[in-house]
Image (cartoon, rainbow, N blue to C red; front, side, top):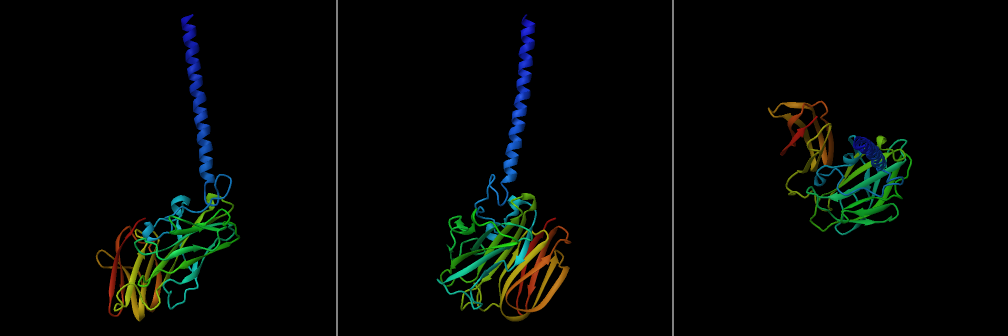
Length: 297
């Protein structure tokens, strides 16, 4: 009798173990489903309400962008952030209208995150909402992003807000923006784009000493995989040479030589470079600036 009872107990324990494994497996499937649904443009079965702060791709955000959550790679774009700031520069304390616009052929869900920052990540100026239905401020008002009511569009979607310029003497300000879009909230179709808008303070050429012609040299992302962005400011027109050198000083890739002036943005394709350390050398008639970069594949 004791042996029969012992057999039944063992069978019951084994049955419970099997049932518990099924319960755990089912729970994991459900949790995984929610994770998939929590892609851009979705939250559960709804739409996500904005981006978390710190994903604009700026140096101050340690170059993090939407790909951290959405995967894939980020594509650099020009002109996705626009303003009515004159070419002569912003007037300290004045209010300007900023437009952030995302594009995605056949896409109908869009999102963005924009922040005007210094190279160290400090907020420059003040962001001001003009559309509380489609946009909101996050990260102690350092970033502006979309709301769940501001994601629907077809092929493109624009958001608008104000920017109150910072105090005199601030100098150059860069608006960094991360954009993401997809079709009906399906994460597998997410595409991430990055764009910047650089503006200067009226009456100044740059934050740097005005006696320098070549100012505000920014090279990013660093490390870089495929596309390297090179931004700098020239007070006056001058012959400018941009080249990439390896550790031995040998030129790698294409050398750019042009007469340039003002805010300059260039892109270098590093996809064919071997992984390693390189130098970006920018040379004008009287000045040379060199920046070290890492290429990782």
